[in-house]
Length: 580
Image (cartoon, rainbow, N blue to C red):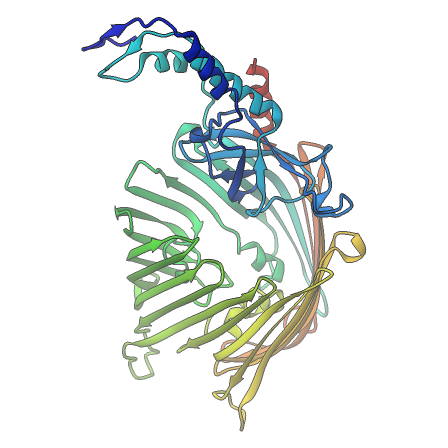
């Protein structure tokens, strides 16, 4: 026990009547037994109470059945009599706590209210009763804290913060074979590695590894152009980030978005930033532009620059964030396009939001063409309003001065929808009963080569849990015409997920596309992917892609086998083993 600079101890004899009154007061239930969920992240959730409500690590909380609903209702199905879900408190702060979902019959939401079971209530009452009836010397003043509290705290082993060294993911080896179709067809093979990781607070530090990566280790004869499957594999993100709540510095490296400037698209590189105040951040970024779904896609292009961000408010009410910066695109380290950019986002609760990003640039012109002046290079505006929980409206405006360089092969996958309409467009998403939802976007194009304006349109519908099988289907159609591209696509997608144990995804369709950079008179494609876990440690994935009728005609098979890892179960078993 630390040396006390000034201590006055007075022994006070216990008064029987006072003890009896204290016992009666403390024998009542704790002042709070219900807690609201603030936020859910995977199997972890955050509640609005902590030590101020006598919560501690290891406590159990439950979600009780609603008495005004039938037990046959899936949303009210019982895990055990009167209980829908059980969670455990794993980390406690003064006014909040982190809980881990142990078992549940449905997905929890931020509208659910957790309760203390009777056993935990009795423990709190017993603690209060013993605390009020024990006789201690009366401590009048100390210089470094309460020695009685310190003695009790030192005697209780403190568990490690749950996110430290929490790791899960998988690593596997894959083989891909491509068979060309038609006259002069060729074959090629590729062997690669795939890694998915979610590792937080590595070795107790503030470094985290998150994302997905797929790369080739050995390649045989290759085709002249990348296939649809190869392009989709390049849309991965994998980043090593440093996030320390006690430091003004943060950084990231890998294939990632700049957190304060998503409009710059994914880069292969990194960023470093410093928090100036609680609401302002400045930083630098550098890398290349490898994502085939980006409007400025070019694997040989370098990018770098600086930014300044200001943000404030609350997501529960009014929230805003604004980023301004400058940068430079280079080809072979020669200046190609200097630019200035802004990105602004403002939202009110979950009902209304406005997002706008733009770049003012000066592209390097072809030597045979006149030099270009500074001007608006691209602008994206989205206004979204949730009329009621089942109906969301949006208004969009898209502008590009130059032809976007995204890979048009991915047109029918839906990854390029935000770039296909130029000018003003509007749409809605409506959720109907029986797990059915519909969406549409309409816009008017008057800058194409047509003699009159044409109507851009996209319609789609999706349904989930078809015939109670858990299968989901989506059908969509799009027709677009702008100054830089015209075309249409039709796609059908069917998927089925059983947690993380099994996944089936089927996608097929037809697409046409024409622009000044590429042309596709029409082709058909199909993707089939099956993934399954083999026991607790292994997984298997098999995919098939075919494309017919366009500039490329081929079949592609990809098979992956690997190992899964997850140390959370080991940590839970160790915690239970050490629990008295």
